Picture 1 (cartoon, rainbow, N blue to C red):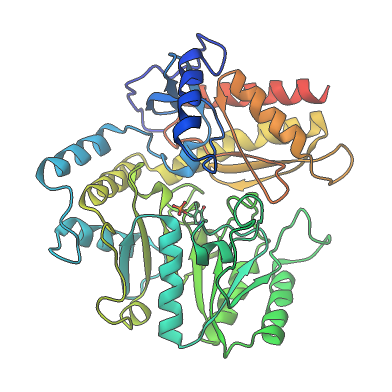
Picture 2 (picture 1 turned 90 degrees about the vertical axis):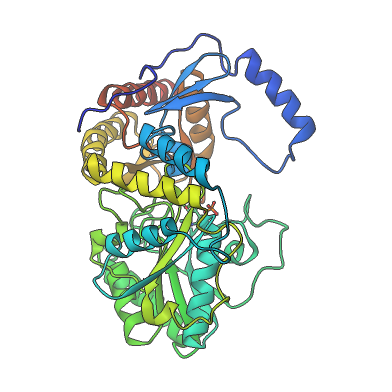
Length: 447
Ligand SMILES: *Cc1c(COP(=O)(O)O)cnc(C)c1O
């Protein structure tokens, strides 16, 4: 990797037990002020963060293997991003692009047209969150096709708004008791190589979906298929080769809009700018957010000009969408990603991590599957000798890793997946230390 200079020492260092007294005091205050429905995986309050390190309010330095859920790929305080934010904020923080527009928005749109797969004419709209991007991708698909049905998949995660809850698969905690949900959403079986019947190819898994779509919906009613090319919250599920391509080709022939939700997989995370590239997919619309702007809230849809330009003026937008400070952060972030060749860095991380996880699987017998792409890697924990999910062990491993100073996230429909999403700028040494903690914890927990 291109050498990076960090502001904070890139070392794990605990000076209290976790959570420390200041974090504990903040948890007490929080309980009286913040709604209980907002969870935090880690009860430790942040004072500073840089590269692969998070420093808490008690002075503990933790290794960040979560990137704030795949957001801070360039680190949480990259100097180029911080400078771009300060510079833009010193001039104007907001005017509303729908009132008096500005160049930053246009430049982000130009960048996304160049970076996303496909050489066709493209248009972009900017928003604030991944869910908002997904909602708007569906709005465009429905208006442009004149059809209403939408297909989403088992294990899908698309957000927490009403329509995106309907698209999301998992009930607890995302949907339970929040209904009724938006209509005309149909769920189809995902290709999940670890849990599918042995030998099922990607094409066969796609044919299974296609015959159901034809029988239960009909292409004449189907506006869009939305899919994460590598599923995120659902468990870092990488579909079998050919699954995405077969579905995309079927959609293309039937004027069904193929939407790739790359909110988590986008921007170098999987070792390519977009995960669709691994399967040579050119989506009609891509939804993006998370890694796009170095931690500032920004989201986007980029897609075929003929689809996006169907929408009447005023039909798309939002007060804050494409905020100028967030756009400045995105432009700086994309420059850093190119300068450091972060897609290549994600592949390096994959090459460093995968062999260690495979060795750990052989040693402990509780890792049913090691999977992922680039710096989006997961282990699925099961009871020894079975494929039965072990969410209890998963929780215990994450909690014990935290107590030793490593922030690890879990995911998966069955709550039994540990996912690694390090900042792409993490040093090799820090990553190795984080992995050795994970290995130690897993060995001790399964002894
Ligand atoms: C996180 C995520 C979303 C939702 O993004 P928010 O910014 O939290 O609204 C949508 N799709 C995928 C694939 C995600 O990972």
